[in-house]
View (cartoon, rainbow, N blue to C red):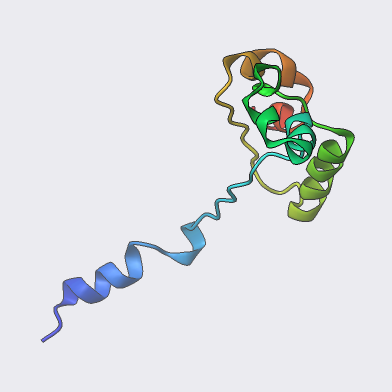
Length: 98
């Protein structure tokens, strides 16, 4: 026997018109990636712990934005406190997250 509650829960908990899509995206190419490809130990170098994007990395960011379109809200997240308020204030994601 199926209760009325089962059928209501199946249609109302996740209505399609109220669903959201979340894209989890890894960072684009940074200078640490380039150096790490040459020598894996470079990933342990503190100089690269807060690495900047390479020109290819910026191109990847640009292409991702074009591919996803601008009809969505973009949030930026970083584990680095320095990146959150300073260096990345010029990145595309920083300006769109507000």
